[in-house]
Amino acid sequence: MRALISVSDKSGVVNFSKELVNLGYEIISTGGTYKALQEAGIAVIEANEVTKFPECFEGRVKTLNPYIHGGILHRRDKQSHLDQAKELGVEGIDLVCVNLYPFKATIEKTDDFEEIIENIDIGGPAMVRSAAKNFDSVIIITDVADYDLVLSNLKNNTNTVEFRRDMMIKAYEHTASYDSMIANYMNKRFNNGFGEKQFIVGNKVFDTRYGENPHQKGALYEFDNHFSTKFKTLKGEASFNNMGDISGAAKIASAFGADNAIAIVKHGNPCGFAIKDTLLESYTEALKCDPVSAFGGVVAVNGIVELDLAKKMNEIFLEVIFAADFTEEAISELSRKQRIKLFSQGTQKLEMANDPINFKIVDGGFVFQDSDAVGANEVKNAELKTSRCAIEQELKDMEIAYKIASLTKSNCVVYVKNSAMVAVGMGMTSRVDAAKAALRKAADMGIDTTGSALASEAFFPFRDSIDAAAEAGVKCVIEPGGSVRDDEVIAAANEYGMALYFSGVRHFLH
Image (cartoon, rainbow, N blue to C red; front, side):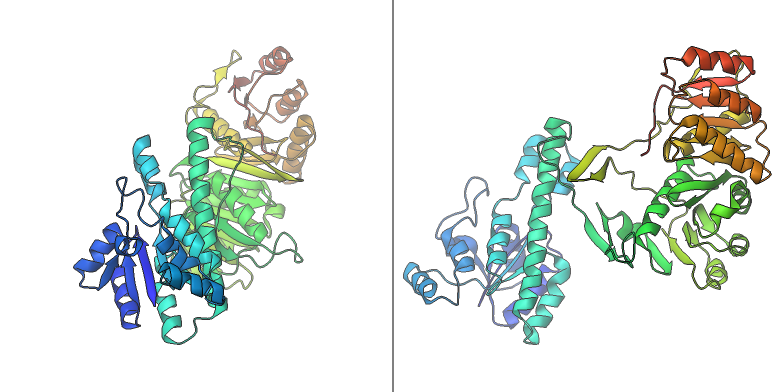
């Protein structure tokens, strides 16, 4: 039996090779792997002894040879293949262990195109694909985490075709994601990220209980390792819908740096938000905005949940709490509610992946775009359009309202007072309806909106939204501007003595 081992990630390869030798395998290797095994005292055959051809072109060609690929690919169940292998002097290779040149690490550390090109693996993917194609007879290993699994199956005579098939699938996933990464990088470098093909690749983290509805299957996938390293299940099982709400709530709660921000989300939209001196105060104020919708909602906490906050949260039914972390006492307290789900990042404050891309499924395909985000100085640099300026607290409220609006389904308006959201209208077919719906709900809750700041994620097409805001006592408004009736809107704001700012940037969320 023969094993071909050629790896960039050499962790665990020496012990793996020793175990294979003990099981009766001859080891063939190349380059740095050959040197590492030889120095470890392992009997190893250099690949050029098999190929009868030297490595050449600065290592670009090592294993692209019929003695290698013939040894991997010839079928052991066909006598004609066995006869031809014997005639050509091709010896079988029964196990291939390959992981590829570190392209991802290379593009993260350098912009040197020549170095990047040299870190595109050719021989490695070819061997992986060959071994995977002949999985009926050959074991293919592409992940160092599988070494123990492979050895266990070899030692226990469980090297079944089903096992090799699983390894085959994993191998093709590996080469597909590798090639996708290269193609996406090249399109980003030369075609602004919008090439003729767009590849979206994710690694499975876990199955959700089901999809959006019980008759649908669902699972969570990650682009890099964000969820693997920053999503810890403390209690319960995350559903498909939970993950969407957690993402929306966390984006809002984390949008204000180290502030003690808490966001409450229901069905993808915020129904409560506040920043106060303590997380307990923030939650208490956030809950006032819409305690009816908050029932069964998802809460994101930009900080560590302690016992006092946990007790307050337990006063109503919350489906999910996602926080930077929890104290043991808080977990114990919250766990008294049987149906609650708790997830954390194991951090001090929420840390977002800030994905650079965004896409949406449409019938027959998907639309793809750069991700949207409020710029660091976008609100600070907004242009004052009226005679009245906002005072310091109004500026803070305006920033909060504007950021929340950018993360709320359009058409939307957001009202914030003393660093807490007091009214929100979202997902409406007209902006004035959004404004009126928000204020009507605030009135139902007995919330005084006098002195609040109002943000809209897109321009006001008419002055009617300003009229409604004035009736609610709004003193400060921020919107992108850009309507043919901007002059009417500005005139209305001046008429009511409001401060009106244009950011110049629209933040639709559909």
